[in-house]
Image (tube, one colour):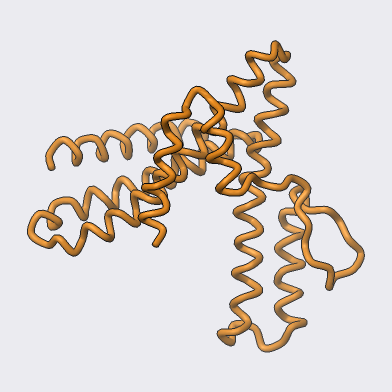
Length: 198
């Protein structure tokens, strides 16, 4: 258990250092996406590190660690997909600007997915009495869209469903991309991801 604990402490420490360096800088979508992955890996590493010690005496914590590992696994696969996109762009002799713009588009799509999940949460929270009316909920969603308007198609109709400018890959597309890449053997990680998803 000691080696795993040391590895998680290393991840947490190094990610925290990196995040302090980029904090306050104007980051591209691609950089924001990578910083978000690092931040989440830091939080998960800290949580797993806390759970590892009592897990030896309480095997019921294995499930909790598995749920946390699921998010790290998905973030790792997303990061590898970004690396795959970079490799494909580099092999096709694109310019640095074309490579950057392509990665930025992928980063924007990934961030867009998170924003769309937040909107679904806002819309779903009405069922639990968080909003008293559809109008109040629509106002919250529209305010959210205005705050992140660079990610959404603009509409004059406040009742229209939000439409993302960049559509994220589905989980299956992500794994298909990886299976066609230099990381083909990582497609097996999908099985582990599915296991911890259930």
